[in-house]
Length: 311
Image (cartoon, rainbow, N blue to C red):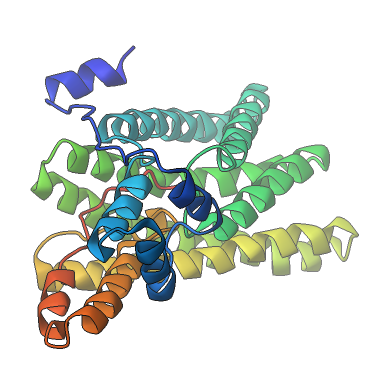
């Protein structure tokens, strides 16, 4: 009701992707592997009596037809931007007042992360599927555990710290979908800074330190101490991995002058895999074609285009 009219104002169209022609043989192969290697491509080419390039093109179209449109990704990012903004304000208020508002905050966060976790199994499978599954599982367990054990202050702090940076990530995505590159770049810079401050400074040196060290000194050991800190450290490990990916994007942006594709948001069949297949095929089909194929493989990465599973 809101996101689509905004997308229309920004002239973001759903677009009609080209669909691969129906082919039972290739479809069976596609169900087992979305990116067949060079030997499989050549075998299918002989079996179908097709040119190698035609077989490659079929798999490329078949992969792309399952990708969500820019309009769909825009609506998804706008929904998440709205949620993170509202939840951050709700969590801040609940933390200050210690009112029953914390219950509403917990329910909203728990429902949101359950929706993210369940949607992983219906959306296009992405390269970060395992990482995001572990993150969502740890987050859901931590939210439930902290509420059941009356550790509301710790849980509220953790959720607030996490929501702060995701606001700017979704904002940068919206700007990218609307093709406002400089706004996208600015949003990504702000996101990177906020991510570093909240998740690599505040979270480990204040929140984890308080739960891991200070709680032990104040009240001594308790059974839930091990599980609580284990979950917090799992999240911190994921933060370090994500910041490494963010740093890679930032380094690419310095040399290219614009934010590159978010590595976490790729679907399973990445463009790099496709490029490698093309290089192998062309080198075998055209002895002098290696240089040309490498040139065509350069620059296949698109800009920030992912419906990132939020962390």
